[in-house]
Image (cartoon, rainbow, N blue to C red; front, side, top):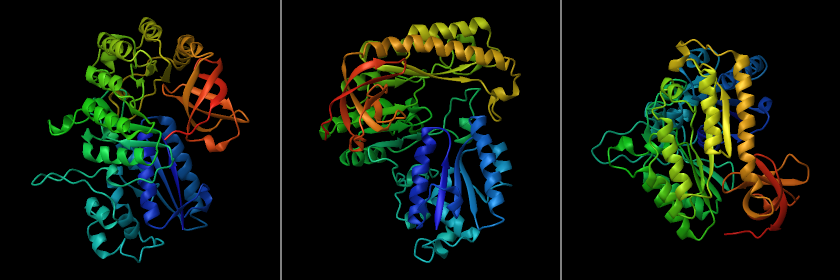
Length: 472
């Protein structure tokens, strides 16, 4: 029997998908790239953006038509708002939270699905009786479970209880925290993933250690607000800075070459000791993704971002002072409710001041569940498009200054795969600047190589391979 999985949205959803794939493999399902060949089809959804939800409806409409001709079970999970969940219940066979992932085998059995190995000890009556206790089912499936401290209330189950099947042999994503307490008015994450919960640091260090030992070259720590890691444990866990320092020390001591990233931090919670740890440890990649969202203080207040431009400027100052070679990425929303021309100009000024290497610019779109959904979306769509184009042009002018500095230099890069340009491979530098070079040697994929830069564009560069030696 076969399954097909569609993954929408952020890196966190992709990390969740790797754990879903582990569940399906344990049940004896083989993954298929073709939807029409699958017996079970699922979506890891994202309610944060309307486009992603529109895609969900398009997919399920097609799949439900197939049910007239074949036996097919459909499910949806991931970041799903209550309004979307109510609608999905009428369209999908199974709708569940990712926190319930370890119970998925029992859900299938209760639904009447005969899995390839359903007659083994994986699924049996005792497991079905324990369906309301995902951690117990996870143990029966031989997956790792959270180990709560003695005499303490057991924590709610999290996706990271399930050991993943990594989709890459050289890049991995490690969830360290789930949920968010910030309640930005434009964002639905607190309503889809709940309040902040930190993963035990011992589990994070164990997973990272195994990945480093296996030769993984790029590891990214994931969380909606990684800076708040450990705060929900009331002093019983490492701080985010200490966690980074432990990981960096472990990677440095391994003798392996590895770049450790994290996303996403929040300017309000970013502390100087995080940047100090990055400067101290060779394996902590010199790249920071620091969302600004707007360059205007009044807009930031309406967004409930809880940081001012003065605070943001302080954090960037630490980065420039302690990590002079680091690249700086950000997120920006244009056309947020009430944004005036003057306020947009302040955002343009911020792009020029901070000289970002990359910015992910989005035109504001109200999402059900977010606080701003109740507000009038009073910036005309044509104005949003114009601001998007103007800010993109500003960004290109600033970013190309950095990439021009790379011309003639030899840079270290991680080869990630074939480039869209025929006969080329591509990847990125430690600072996540995209680089391509002429080669058809697929054995280089997943390795570090040295490339001499010959030409640049605002967000990428092209060069020639000068050293293809594979590192430990």
